[in-house]
Image 1 (cartoon, chains in turn orange, blue):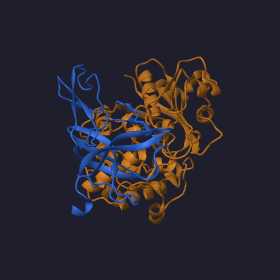
Image 2 (tube, one colour; image 1 turned 120 degrees about the vertical axis):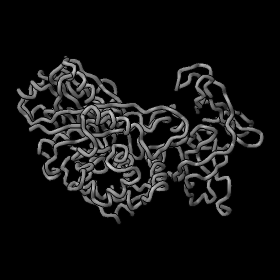
Image 3 (cartoon, one colour; image 1 turned 120 degrees about the horizontal axis):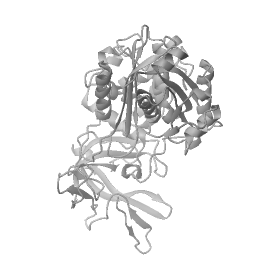
Image 4 (spheres, chains in turn blue, cyan; image 1 turned 45 degrees about the vertical axis):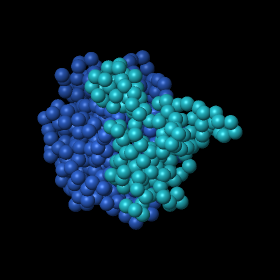
Length: 381
Length: 147
């Protein structure tokens, strides 16, 4: 297989954009990407656009706004991993030699769905019972706190860390630090989770350009090598499940480390899917960044801070950037790309050479998550 | 999932969600499918085994005793459900079920501690128009003050 690069990225700032449909936000990100590197739209040979609530033919509706109409384009839905999955499909096509230049985008407008917990799929036994994502993560949190020495204060540490990172990110939905007292005083959502332990419903879009080596050289932009691109689906069963161990992340990570020839200790930064504060503990452990049952200690000890052992969500994570569901995977890749090309500004992890971008989610019964994507990227000399 | 309507005269129409009805003793009928080839157990019931794709599955009725794996008080919930409400993941007869949970103090509900033994009952979980949706519910087998 041929090496595949990320050669450009753009994010339409995340936030509340009630008057801007998903396709328009996507076009803003895709247009900024093309203009930023002076790339003509007809140089793009294919497009993959991830979205959950964007509707039919969202890829066409995004890309035709920026002059990409005619080539093959695909709308990709895989819950929170939608644009991670879009990137994976683009990676496959370039690695296989089918294309040299593919645009990947993720787009979402959640404001149009109203406030509160996101609507989940219908005809699902747990949704029929009133299940919402915060409740599912609340129960993971309750069990984790029961099984380990972690407390609610440890969950709050995740929020304070990631909101501190996000305060420096001009693309984040929330660009303000929060204190422990503010988190404690925030509205209870599902015990033990308070509002600030949960990511906000956000509108936004992100785009990354994937290319072959030859195309990247010709383009001449800073680039990062995709060392691993992995998607896994949730293993379905309806029997006992250990909800403190997301096996979908473990299986994805194992495959990604094997593909990259790298291990968790090699990661300089990880953009982790912290849709809820508890998720940082669960996924950090499943990614091998901390021993099982100890991620809360790693956070408390500063090991996951920007200047720590491994920077976890230096962009601010979903807790700060927000979670425009279908756009999150492309956003995680964009933030990682800027880190590895030394373009992350105030967010820069000093000397970042290896990054892992992780997205996972999907609220259907019988799986820990519906889909998970992991990409491992390395800096070029 | 299986549903059925019981149109008792004068009473609101009742539709079962997840459970197949209620026994005379007030306990819910909860059916589990057991694969005749690989013995995997499924809830809600299904025609094809999701482990081995075999299409001969036995239907068995779950008992009424389970164990809470985890639990939460939902304060911002799904549309149609009055908050706060308590949800628990419960293991019963080899399957994991998400169930509404009755707590001693209805005004100030508390989540069940992991590992709490629970008993299944049948009751309403919400109303939809003129229809009362009923399902299985759980409560701690031993009252809090006796634990």
